[in-house]
Length: 97
Image (cartoon, rainbow, N blue to C red):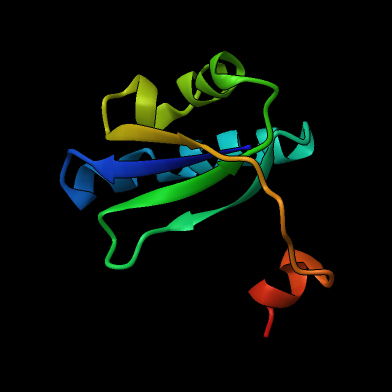
């Protein structure tokens, strides 16, 4: 499991030009089962993407397709972790309190 922490390196006006393409990319990878959750950081200085991938190279391949990455909009810090505990009711309840 991987968490990608995105940090914008361009102004929000530039980020917004690629936002729809970024969301389309996310939707494609949610449909493929690659992503678990994602969203903007607060304050809006970047974002976070939780990725289900077999290894670091697979996670990097997924992130290489992000329009934010392709167009130099964000830097990516990738953190690998092994989930050992989880909420029985799942993320859906956490996201919709």
